[in-house]
Image 1 (cartoon, one colour):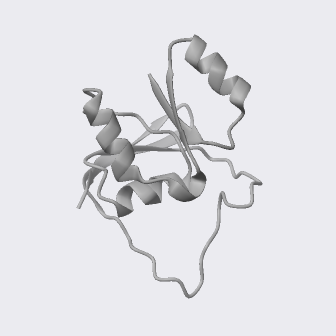
Image 2 (tube, rainbow, N blue to C red):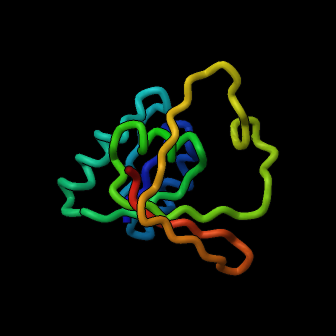
Length: 117
């Protein structure tokens, strides 16, 4: 298991994860490059990965064409974090359409899966 995170993440938690068998990849938030992460995972023989994150992470993966297929789970809850749910005004935004998109419900969550166009 590979876990990628910020250098600011809790060092003791990273150590716990490593002791449990995970490989922890860390870098400064400002230097996060999805393409570099993809290359590292491919060098380890990984071709399919599951990514958990919020809008900022998902957007960065789409923007760098690191997504071949996606399954997005939307929980009917809003977070109070500053960067969690936000609408930008006056900022150009790219819209990612999905082809062959499927929708389903799983334990109250909405699940969307498909490939980006």
